[in-house]
Image (cartoon, rainbow, N blue to C red):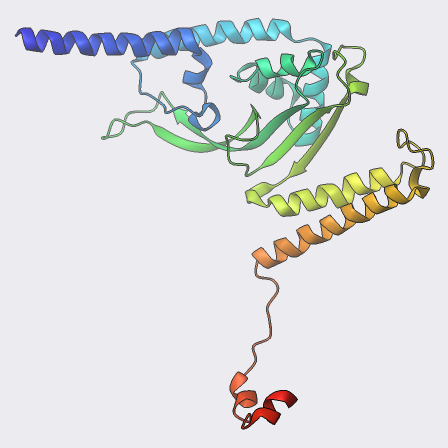
Length: 273
């Protein structure tokens, strides 16, 4: 009896620890897709899920109150670039565990880049009936989430914001201090997406800059600028060749070697060949 009591007490302690971690640590991570949080999902009791959802709602409303013109600028760019409604983008952002990265991006000398992926992720259906093995049903669904770019596989669309200086990003300068870009790598076609982004957007934009090249006074006429643009063009060509090689679109002609080898009888034949 004493042994059983100790085991039961240990189980209760373990469950209490897991619950405390889930509730006080990051409530949103319990209701977000496992693939975006990087954590293994745990089947929790319905009361626990309700409490976590309640706290998650409080956190979301606190974050919603922090939304200002800077956030709205990012939201509008994301909505236009990806093809979503502003309200949907806002909801995804305030539900994201990495929401604090936005403030770090706005801060003086803050993050140089802010990345978003929009792609299929596994969504857990908590209200679905449990399967025989105790698991819940999962399904793929499009999701917009903040990422560092190094923990999730990239299979969809990447939207990014880049800072142009170390100044604090304010409501009045956000459109000047922050650049926005997007490239589509649907189904993991990263080489194709990057090649298109460079050839159709970046290179034309660079070549349109006649004079605005910082300390270089001659602009496009400068030999270093010409060499740089040539290198970028060459890199795009390399991307295209690499993609074709990967997709097996370049096939070498098959040759019947025996026809040539059978006629080689002495050293002079080899020299001739």
